Length: 202
Length: 202
DNA sequence: TAATTTTATCACTGCGCGGTGACTTTTTTG
DNA sequence: CAAAAAAGTCACCGCGCAGTGATAAAATTA
Image (cartoon, rainbow over all chains, first blue to last red):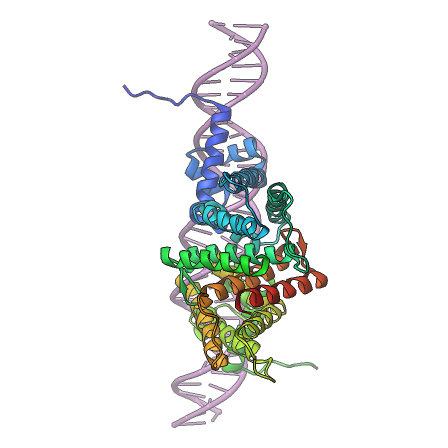
């Protein structure tokens, strides 16, 4: 009876470990992210983390790659009609990013990690994200151009950074500068992003 | 010769410990912030941390209080002529915050801490900062009002959050979305903040 | 000077961590 | 079936951590 001795399968186990690593990171944050916790969550021995994933660094690298893919998809989603102005383009980007980020705890944890530690690993995450964002802009922009006299990359950086920090603050403490980050609060933030973008680009 | 047996002085020692705690936090970040490291930096026994500061929580509380005072002073600094418009008011706030934050590693570490952990302690830090900011606005505003139809608190949240995240990103990886955060880059960011504020409020 | 209280140090416990070598069990190959 | 290779487990090491009870040294009081 019940002699299921779980058949052995290397790639399956490697996958399980990667999933466990993501789960632990999403739930505990990078502070509690280590071989012991991951092996515990994966239900296997920690040795396998070193064998199948080059240790924690390899796992982090894999997660970073998945994150880059996620970002691509999250931004690419709201297709349909192309933007008719640079202001609309950037508004779409910022709002798509805001929504996607709010729904992705793992991504939030990685962002927090990026500002809390300054390892090379984490720098690469940030650089990859920046590249993905800029690539999206370059691809979607078409022949739309920001108004002359406006430093679009700098303004975009402020907007996206604002969105990013608000999502992190919302997850961590539920409010920012007196604005409660509940559903109504997020609606206000979205409206403010729209106003800011059209105020500078429109 | 040289028999300086350091005279004992409780309040002096308590101060030394607090300073050491700040130094360790500023240099190592909150990950390396613990009784052992602090005692080592203060050159005394860790037991004294429990005796004179109620342990790590008490120290954190004290540091948080100092931070709140620092923020007050950092924002209050650029007096002189009062702002002539709401746009100018918020531009001043954002730029003063940006400059002060960039120069204060300890404050940066605390901000990173706030988004990385979700303890009650850290929530209080965030709440206190938010209150200080709003109090500054209420005090300096005079009879200036934002244009009708603009949700000023929400827009200010986006702006300040953007400034905050950019400073953290600059310290951690030196760039954000392709904008290098060196002296020239910060000039661009400041200009963008000015444009955003006057675009939405001006 | 002697007794007492304050200040500071020491030595230790228990824990979880990252990491590794030796082992057992299953699967594949000959 | 036996041998070899792959997959997975176990027991252990050294380390740094938070926390604590007993103890030593200085300062204060009697």
